[in-house]
Image 1: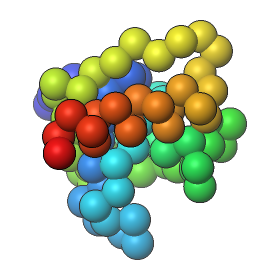
Image 2: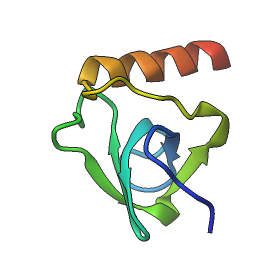
Image 3: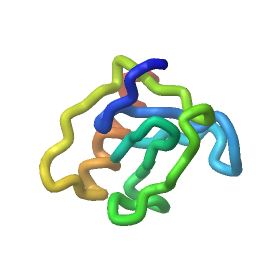
Length: 84
């Protein structure tokens, strides 16, 4: 199984949020907790099964401490800008 760490970015593959880009806040063997800084903020991240995400390996970013919603939004925005 691939290693999924906090700080990586991931796309949702299933559910009503399919296609959404998220920042991984926390991960364990079965679930990951995701934040987009808007609807799912860092204080109450979305819990999602690891099978339902596609991790972006080149998108791993060290976030500032403490992790804020603004920092997550900035990280996602910078990644999307590079991809376009």
